[in-house]
Amino acid sequence: MRVPRDFMARPEIERELLTDHTWCDACEAADLGLDEPVEYSEGGQVFITGSCRKCGQTVTSEVIEKTAT
Image (cartoon, rainbow, N blue to C red; front, side, top):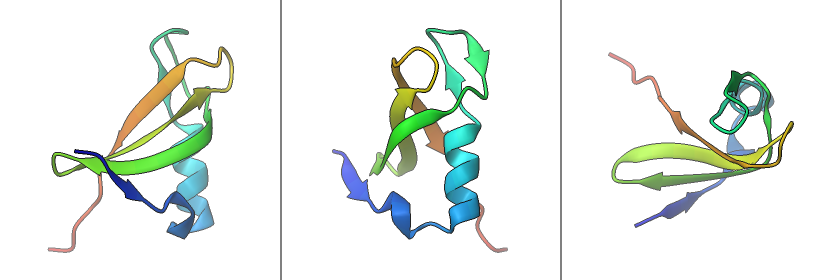
């Protein structure tokens, strides 16, 4: 089950990194960026989804969150 998260609660630098460094399966290219980001968690993982800035197809990236040790 998808659980919505607040993408805008992240620091600006994180938001920029997460929206700029993406992979688009349709374009088969990296770092094209995504627009209209939506953040959610599902199955214990965090994802950002949006539209590829080049072709408009849906792009989904898993967010790996570092934990303090």
